[in-house]
Length: 454
Ligand SMILES: C[S@@+](CC[C@H](N)C(=O)[O-])C[C@H]1O[C@@H](n2cnc3c(N)ncnc32)[C@H](O)[C@@H]1O
Image (cartoon, rainbow, N blue to C red; front, side, top):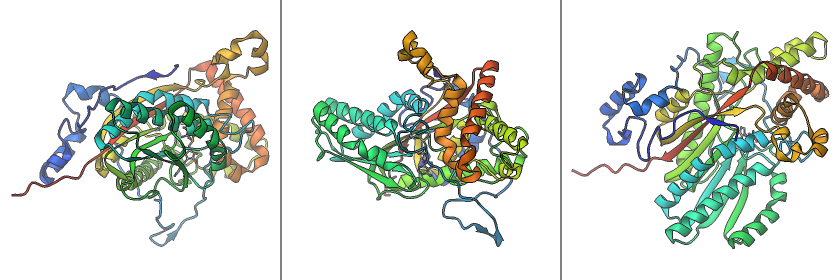
């Protein structure tokens, strides 16, 4: 595993909230307010110092210039033009498909495996359910979707065996936006069920799998129907683009542009948490992993460089009149890589969940390069399979962002764009060892507070 766990094991222990061991629910409103204020200052407890290292100061919200799911585009009478960006990964099983180019995201899932296991066990132990509701949000298509589900089932199976209780019925929901290639997953379900029957004697009557199309920034499931929720490599996608004149944040962005992205991220995550809090049972668990940053600076290389290089590739094409420069100015990626502090502050403000764990992992851009794979160390196959790190990363990014770029810039420039992009990425690899930051947060749904009767 190339990834390095750079922080924060054990930052928050079971049942402990970020307010330094004091659960907000145990406090009166007044006390709650005091604790909230304390959170703004640097905590004294040494247990927090490791966490605080990766936190930065919250940015002030100087503008209210972003849109929210379900909010009207007509904002206070100012009709604003907004382009819907198609967010779906490349479909099918072809050369540029997500199914064939998601090794990096698979590594990201495996980085969080022990955190996922811990959260599933916690949920089973607290609930002893007859039937367990499990959801993977932003499942996409290809092998990763069923890999996650398979790992979760393994853990439920092992933990119920250990507790000596019967295996609950498994109600598994795979969610993504309606444009997702759900068929690609459904086609592999017979094989998946066959394996489950062979390995664990779980027949189709014990494991119900369904696809749930819709945005996870709104309600998707019935009330109190979910015991465990997982989402990987998805929550950095905002509910809509901000159209701020650059394809993403950069060193040259104005302060209010940073604020607008942060505000949209906060609103989206807050809607996400609110929706899940209604859908999840008390003490249910949720593990979310998404791109983030360690640096306080939202324009740092670890969160912006992949977009910066894409902008450079587009600009080089504009210079040769393949693309109009105005088109580049009018595209913005619905993406935001938050800091741990930004994430924590949204979770605390929303108030339905306790943070059980929060970790950040460094993920090498070439973490999924075939040249890292032993099969390709064979001299007979190396020539056939070898592609440069730039080409490999370019394929990973293309599988994710091509649908968004294609509907804005046109299909015909895609091959050339990603050819240039891979060259720029190769040059960047010569200068540095590029990394992204994956934030993993494990949450527990707070239970109902029963007020003591006088
Ligand atoms: C990079 S893929 C990750 C797929 C899979 N979880 C993995 O780890 O390989 C991100 C997925 O999030 C989905 N997504 C983005 N915004 C979403 C939203 N608002 N609601 C549901 N899914 C969303 C995208 O369609 C895409 O399939």
